[in-house]
Image (tube, rainbow, N blue to C red; front, side, top):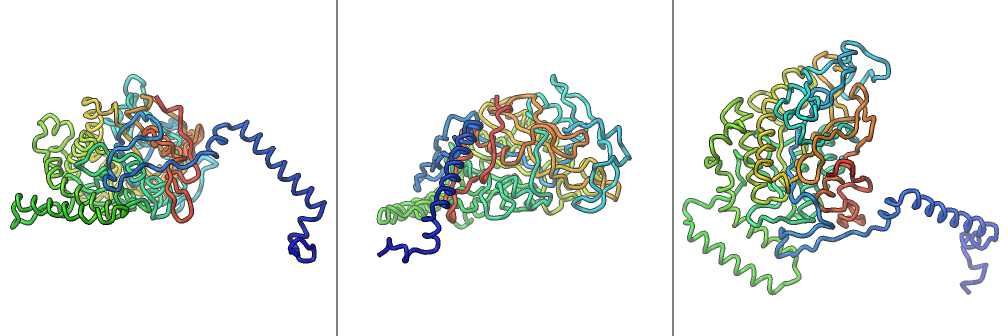
Length: 498
């Protein structure tokens, strides 16, 4: 018989032991009591532990159709301005007078070796800092145009990350994981919300004129989410591939072909109404058909007035700066059309005409950062001013970011700053964000996050919140796990919310 003690396993005999039974019961009751105490101490943690995933109601026939969020968000769209290579926060937006005081010295407590080897001495900022705007925010002369917008920005000075390598840093910032194969922020946002624009992709990545960033298409990929939600990459110089019809095919014949294909696809779908993959492919082809007319119009910047061309700088400065300025105008036009997520890159992996690839400055930072700033400063500031002037900042969240910062001391070569994952600065502006705020602080040297440290998970959780999405409930079941942009981490930074 199964209840005969002689037929029980050793584990069963262990459980029948009165002493062990009392001990296990005591541990169980103690665990329940501890959980109750922790819940009383941190109600948010208790609430989050009971949250179930919310699956967006996606119609396979219309995967890009607009969908409501988990709650009403302040922002309807997001413009991400991503600067690969690690912008030096201590030379741009994080003012540290101690660097000037200890210039040329090596105070105790700072490391002797960092990512690329031995360290040199403390170095004061390579550009002067000045107060800007009504808030008097101290920003450097490296980026005077961006600094002039200080009253519109919410600066986060205490970000820190998990890696000091560029590809992994880009992955982590844009996907929440250092490894490849995970969905980007833009893919998560469009998976959840779709897009109000039916003639253009829901998520557009505008790559730098020089090419892709270090982590390539991972920065705007869909990972394990449905392929419909990956970013479509093109820029003002290079339109999407394969949209132009052959010269031998007239517009009328092309339209007839498209209509015939639509009819045949719909007939086929009627036979297999439950085939979501088939419906998604049909929707993808139909969007491509719409893009044949919408994209050429979107990319024709010749109709922009002269004052816009001058403001953005499309006809002044280096070739790379002029090309990036056109990308900025393209970004504004995409936002204006209602594209849900626009990701604009300022930096790449391959180098361009000036020999500089991005913001990575291990040597001669005075030259390399200055050359990259010449490309980024005026056009980016003009883009933000233009969005504000047109009322688009009322519905758009602007995110200016980079994967990590740079050290307050020089490398042993005496001319460059090494990678610093322990603190860096990013900014938010626009819908739902407090203006002219500086949140968090690094230490006196800008070496480590010291006050109100912010994880990248927190940063991404806050962006999703501003879109009306709960980062703990926006998930996708993959390989036995409920995957999230913020993994199992992250808290909304409530102090930056307007």
